[in-house]
Image (tube, rainbow, N blue to C red):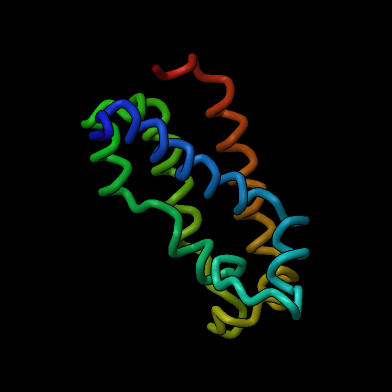
Length: 125
């Protein structure tokens, strides 16, 4: 059984929106990034940043019909904000310092705003 372009698009959109949602959730980050028993590498600053789609992926998603032009624009603009963030002292592995970083809080707020904009758009497909 093959997967259709539409099914792939729905799955990819869900992953991209989930990534934005996770970045916009500081409580989730505190619970998971600082949990000493957590062994899943996804729950870290490095993975959150690396998991967010880059501009090329988002543009390709738009061309394939997985994202509307408005959705792609919102996600791409947020991606620029995320890429501009620099972890304190350049240490991307110090989750506690990042969670205390006012600049990271700005990124979190930007993710929340982007998600709000996305939810106000007409439903794509």
